[in-house]
Amino acid sequence: MRRGVRIQNLGGALAVLLHRPHPTVQALTRQLEAIGLNVAIAWPELPPTSLAADFVFFDADMGHSAQFPWPEGEPPVPLIALIGSEAPGRIEWSLLAGAHAQLLKPVGDSGAYSALLIARAAFDAQHAMQAKIEDLQNRVNARMTVVKAVMRLAARGKSEAEAYAQLRHMAMAWRISFEEAAERIVGPDASDERDAQ
Amino acid sequence: MATYLSTALDATLSPAHGDIIIWHYRQLAFTPHDLIGTLQPQVSGAFFVSWVHMMRRIELGLLYSRSGDYSLISEACRSGSLGAVALVNADPDIDLTFVPVERDPGGDVDLYAPLCDEILRQTSARHVIGCVTSWSRKEVIPTLEASGGTLWYAVPYEGFEASDHVVYTHACPNQHLLPLLEWALPTYGRRAFLTGSNYIWGWEMNRLARGALTGAGGQVLGERYLPIGSVDIDRIIEEIEATEPDFVLNSLIGRSSYQFLRAYHDLGKRDRRFLPQTRPVLSCNMTECELPAIGSAADGLIAAGPYFQGGGTDWHGPGTFGSSHEAAAFTAVWELARLLAHRPGSEVLSLSNLMRTDAAKGSRIDHQTHHTALPTLIARANAGRFEVIQAHEAIAGDPYLTHPRPARDIRAALRVVS
Image (tube, rainbow over all chains, first blue to last red):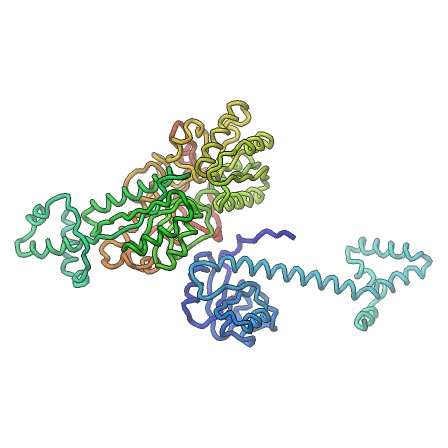
């Protein structure tokens, strides 16, 4: 799959830097502001406003999971690790935290821009994938409902194939998914059976 | 003269000037006795000593390739730099003299970093005026970072950079490419052919052009690259002939570009469909300094730039210039002199610290991006000159294109029409 890199809407985006006061913060702030972002610096905890951030950079050296105001590994924004020590334990924790990109410390003159683009592309890809998985999961879960709906329609004297085609036409006419149409035909009790699977 | 004398005397009395290290005395164009004669006898001795001591000798790096593929641009930049050095050195109101320290990479991209390093390590220069291609600029940035030096870059480039060690005195895409396309699309049409030299300038310019074109409902009919120095343009000409684009955006450089323009001119002579009035070639890097290499084949070429000779612009600083390359290099030296003047010791500051001094407050150099606010002129080449078609007021450089484009009233923008 080929995706274009979104670059136009970095202007005015908010980046929160979760890092203790350090020259790296200064260098990163300079880069981000030159790119056109607004920067907020936080330590040791992310303030509630960070949920509205567009990017979060975090200290992979001194950080820990309790600093993030979201379930572990499920950041609601693109997350970028600031890695100083390349110790495997710290890298593992950065991955568990859900980092989408990384930037090596000491941060100098460059690196922030590519980290922003890569993190957002990874974040978007992850979410698109998640949405697709949820959709497929729902369809798998609805298999029993579909079978019951087809049987119910077939019980009115249609062949299985005709019943199936009728269900598809109903879904199209109602402008809902095949699975949702099946659920309407079977009735609310279908959900109990779905849960039982 | 009166202003100068009082400034000099104020400086004389200031204790901050007492411990200036002096390497060299300035060559004087007039005798100090002429000055001393205007002063009271009890002041003159002290004034003379301090005045000579105030002449700070500051080495200034120049890193331009005087041979190789893009030497015409190098020469224009070099001449702008040296012109400004001469003017600074002759200006009695400026308490410093620049001493150029030159290195010539000869067009070899691998020599830029070592030669820049040589300037920064073997001389006292902390500022280097130089580089033409983005490739060479990116090569020297790690060296600048390591030594805390500053590069003044006086050539249009493709943006997406804001180094803490580079000042960009020529235009970036929101100051050249985007206004050029905003004008060209309604004028000629939305079907474009893109050419470029095979490195970051061509690639990124064409990526931006593609984005702007498709965003405006336009179309890219072809996109072709040549290695720097290649003159193998027949295939590109054939593809243009076959696709009949409304215009060609040419981001080739040096000999490739000259050869392309000559071949496209020949095509126009053979086939009227490709005359520049109907299907022009557009450029964001062509200035007067390269026109002699192309001759009449350049006629009809449309270029965007911050300055054209006699173009009636609000270009800052004194003087008129042969091209925007010369103007941007001149401005680099002139602005550096302004930032360093009357601030002994400031010549060793890093760029970020220099931009924190009071002198930087009125600068056209942006404190965050180190880009320069510049006007945009769109001009047509004719008989060795550029005639301005459209002029836009100066806007800040927006290297990452993260700021909204200025809403322009197209009628108001049509200030100059030829």
